[in-house]
Image (cartoon, rainbow, N blue to C red; front, side):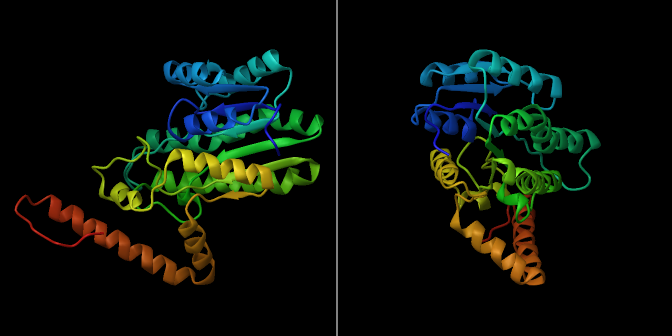
Length: 271
């Protein structure tokens, strides 16, 4: 799909990948861009820069999403491209509190469900459109540091697959964005796991360019890092060896964390 003359709705568009997506899409001369985000101040900054419209939205609230969709239709009469981009993370494994698990479930999974409920029927009725879900390489592989992030991003990938299977023959193009590390505030460089991700990180501008290419080709996976495709292919070919390799990486990170906890400990090992 070409974006020229289209109406594009982007959630989580105020910062990071979302901001880069909005900036890149604006260069395609769409008819309109609506940026929905809880961070209304930054959403308005981006909107002023590119000539878009900013609206406040908590994507974990279905009523908010329905309101944003209606506001977009009131402005432009239709929506052609939906980019469901908002996402959050936490640290920790299964011991993380239920409220953290629920928060990630609502934002990383249910927000995509809510947005599809509000937009996909109309997209199909008008003859088709595009729905993009920002998941993560963690949804194809895993995330060593955060159980809740890994599980919910797997859910996001699964939902994107479901949408594609059910609606591609009715004119809906579904794309699933699965980057590994991206050089945004999302990466906490005090965290050894995020330091590991930083080794293969790319800029949000590169991610946005990859999304544009996939939209033009109407393919499903957006993989800004070629290594992710290789890891994913290896996972399907030798699942146990893949698990062994990731367990080894986890062990190395844990050893590094243990050494950092001892002030006088010295080691030359790097990740």
